[in-house]
Image 1 (spheres, rainbow, N blue to C red):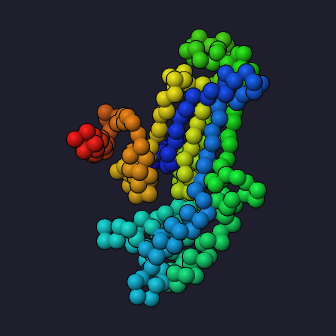
Image 2 (image 1 turned 60 degrees about the vertical axis):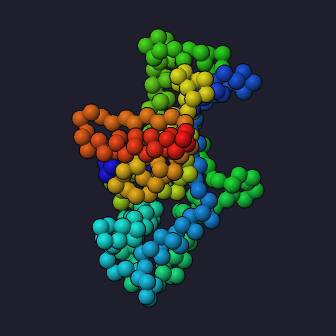
Image 3 (image 1 turned 90 degrees about the horizontal axis):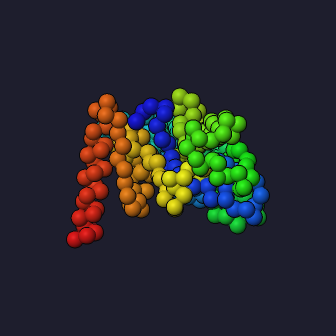
Length: 264
């Protein structure tokens, strides 16, 4: 999808069990953890991407953006670098050596701050925690009722918390603006959201994936990789969007093929 509203990173939805942990005192109603890839992982991928955007002889950056039909891999690499560093980044380096461009991009302070392991941290991946709303565990059961059954004050608070949480997490889950500014989603490993969703209270986890037939090659590859670990798959497509028919058919076809191969 080329629309601004499309999912840009893997998003897991889980029940917020902290709401019933009486040993923790007040708990966040909505909690989100945005986990980034490591700087080493990005450095390795960036080297491959820059190489794809370079001529085979002189190892210099192409003078013009690669055409998707003629050079699909190079076009995808060019696009992903522009997404991370801002539209027009690769065009500014046309004709420069691959080594120079790689070193310049790798020094980018914004990317370094996002991905570099924090001093003293025991975690392999950097992450950002987003929380919204606070409630005492003794009052948490009220949140699990149907929205219309929740008392007026708490219902208004829950709606306010949900809207505020969505606004704060959107920059990581969706494309920013019109896509011309630097995007964080290509650098995200996954996003895990915890909320007062009773349908997930037994341990089920819903995963929202970028489409596998997405116009953005990088988003499509994320989905294809994640689907291999899903126990069940729902293919959801609005009935009025005939353009999505191909997506549904492809997903179902691949899923059935995998089941046939696994089950013999």
